[in-house]
Image (cartoon, rainbow, N blue to C red):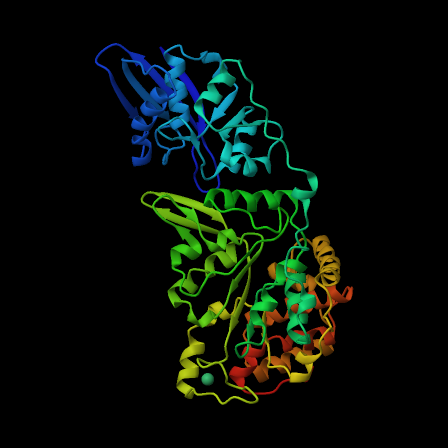
Length: 511
Ligand SMILES: [Zn+2]
């Protein structure tokens, strides 16, 4: 007697189909699993036997062969427990085999037959729908699956409930879609608001520019000036995610076994890994590869506080995904790719003690200590930041102006949206402008060209740096609603290259 049950593996953020074939034959009672099962799947034998017996089913005293196909697909964890158990029940006539046809099943069994939650349910919901089947999952994953439910997801907490459904005795009710407002919450309301930030006009403006053009931003300044406070407000001035992007974000979180942040479905993620984070924690990996911080920041913001404190090796692995928007993780002969299209905001002190350039506190560092500290960030990495902006110590009077609030995130976000709409018409965000598109979008007049040439000479800027200045100038023109980039935009953009300027020690143009 042969039974076939449909299930799904979890590889990267995809959920390829796995067919569980269960064959009962004569011979000494035994159970074998074939088809590249990993340890977690091999242990499934004992769990399935106990679960079936404890739930009051008969465990067939036959030779049981279980094949997980295709064989070349890696399979890990207990997610195949439920399909294996159902296959045994169908093959031994304890549930009708036809009842399995239109469904897919995933779930780890506990010894008493209860279903335990899994990682990566959301991609499986989408993939099962593509295949024209409904998916049955553990009850504990129902909230997550609801994000993508179209009435084709069933959830159960015990194998007995699953069998009642398959026998037609007590049908399960499909997992409902969550109420529209919960799913569609723009999320900005939940995020920290820019209105809480007093003063800091230049860093606030830089944050708006970064949001408008998708630029990477580096804040530097002494401790306690609000660099982290500013950075954490970036998601609140970014446009809400569209449906496709929101589903990508939710899928990465599902595979990582991490809940979506409280801000809601459409909120761009904000991740701030500690500087002691390992390369694996940051980019992903592990024996069955899981997404790292950069993938959890997909379509959102990766905040790297105390940038020079990160291990240099760890920072260097960021360079590739910052260009390509994804990260490939190799493990044995296999490669898994996770999405990682994120915007970076980094913060650093000006020197190891933090007080270089401080108006009242004396810096304790030697020049060579300062140099070593700054050189921890390689040129190629620094080059990926379009904006370097100082967050200075503020005069006491600014901080003491109680009751006075800054402009709110909502009103800044409105300008960001307008600027992004202009970019959408040109085809891409200004941060990704390159080659011909860059030349076309950033055409400047002769006077501006002269200004730029002069600035480049004085600052010793590279061609790459020039491109960054032009991209930022384009964003400034978009925020102005101007079709062409003009001199004031270039001057302001040059002002956001403060670390280039420091290297040269030359004052440039007064903005
Ligand atoms: Zn110092």
